[in-house]
Length: 430
Image (cartoon, rainbow, N blue to C red; front, side):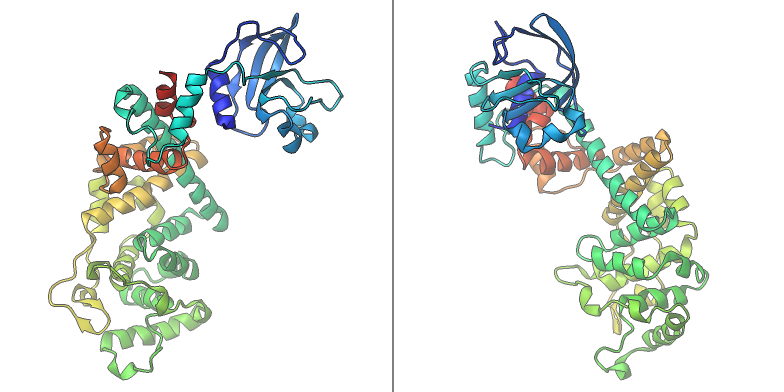
């Protein structure tokens, strides 16, 4: 049994309301259940309920046991003083308002449908990753589509909150925020953290002062990344390109006081990466992107379609990195630029969150519409989660669908929040 199940019973009125009475035998008639409250305060706001001969307007609070009211310290919270009805599974203690008056209480244990409870418990006890997977195909497509919309908006809002934290840390500097977010994205999963630390230690403002000089940008980026430190006392084995970067960085690091902000080479991961994804290659590509794009934030939020992003992201790294995956070892063939999958990843994880954050901060819905349009334009991601949904009959055609399905699975299916899911509720209601 869970409070969310009692919320479900009350919200859809799935309990016996014949001769409905409080624990003090006062007749109850629910005129308006109120609206579900997602913020602090009682569970349902603006309810209208007849208790005895009096119509009350206020809130409804729901607990498994009435004593939970005191355990949660609602008695000391002003936002709970307008509760007109306490809905519980078990009444184990009379509950009083701050003024000493008793809060009317209804118990649902004997009024709830036992078959419905069994159905809910069966879903909660399911060993499947998706508790509803055997009934999923029975649910109307409109319910599934509405859930995709709901979870995608939640995912975008959550990512927007992350951007807000970046903004706060950067004193509302959108350029620096876009730069740090893009840097983290260039590290993809394995090297996201060292890339982000690099961006924090090497502010965009410094790089912009040298944006017309690619070798200096590379010197700054590879230097702060730790690749120009003589960790193994092997300078005699270094090639001319690396030695020149080191010499340049020694001057620039002193000028900008970067000596104590240099990462260790051990922070960068190579395990199970294809050579084209080595951090050295990604750093070179990142350097070239900064060199080519002065106003980073404006570039990222004002391009109109995925093709435009592909054009600016698929720029060639410098000549040295066309022929090298790592320092000092020439490759047999040319090193590729960012592939389509990487471009799509940047749009999904950098551009779209920035647009949503802009929509919220600047109160401009056009940014949100563009974010959704970009996701609809991108192909679906291909992973175990999307494959599982497709095996259940869910159409996953675009990144809009795949991003929503990932959110749905991770934050509703795995924690079994079926009563917060349109499909789960529909299955129970049937």
